[in-house]
Image (cartoon, rainbow, N blue to C red; front, top):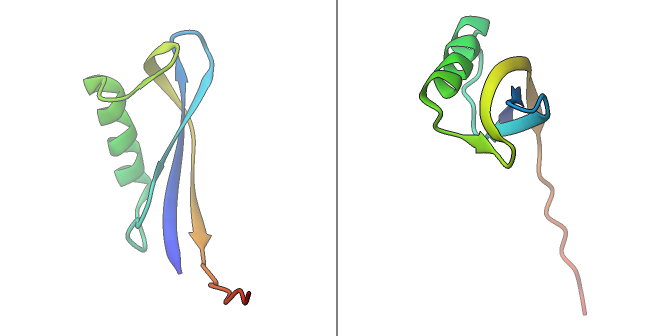
Length: 73
């Protein structure tokens, strides 16, 4: 099972912007998540189509699993 971190920000126009990070370590802390999100905002490393990311609104971790299915012809 893989963990993903979905971080939600607001941009300059108050629109939401989601950023997903795959393969997040087990037990990531709230402090680590806040630090990552603060870094993203302060450096301007990511932008939405409407401009700079200016605030944090939410963060969730998602557990995913993949099942491959054999498809016959």
